[in-house]
Image 1 (tube, rainbow, N blue to C red):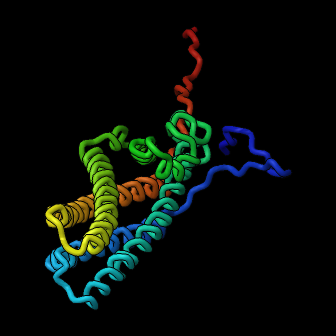
Image 2: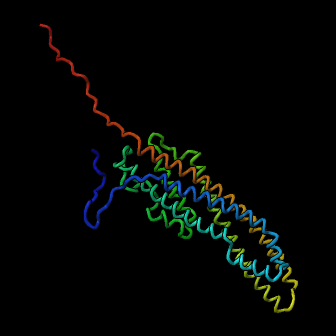
Image 3: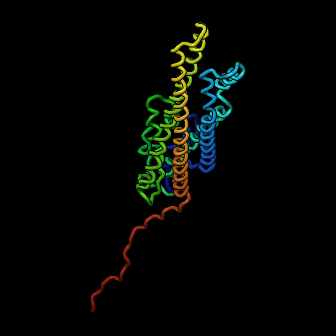
Length: 296
């Protein structure tokens, strides 16, 4: 029986549990469903934004009754029920995906250790030589400023490489896997850049617009500067709608790419853990022959 490749204290306050395998099917299924719903709601929100574009222009040009203006203001401040649902979905998707990522990393440690059903030729202690970042970065990499633009990509790539089949070395570096990996990351980063920039522009424009409205009311009439500002706000609203539509498209591509990547990692890890162990190579012994005796 294969012995553990590193000391494992079984008792006491500093007991260390050896790595083990967890099936990822449930985690992946929940994450994929939530990612799909998020992309669907984002697309629906984009469609509704275009349908309400004329109402936004009327709001900017103050072509509304007092009641309509108040209702529109409350709707903007409340963000709308679809935007609220989108926020809940993003939060749930983040939890489900991070759980899948954490356990996928642990599985890759197990599958490349001497405890695996089919250990590699040179089993390694947990994490050594497999991942460029420590386990804590599985969560922290997504929230830490600056490094969040490349650490998550490195984490996912290392997990994919550590999960590839033993019979297919280099499969994780194939063009298909690389296309899925980099298309997911490029579209995911692009989605958040557009969303953050769009929300920032809309928020600043919203408050600047009300400041202009109050100043115009104090001056007892609209000025040429206010009319020019209204034209600028209409263009901002147009670009926010365009940006949100592009972001929805990017999110769809990111969702499809990550879904295929997750399914591939699940399949590779499941194959490695269920494959029969490799039979040990027996020492070769030549057949014995009777000793030679000269004829008398």
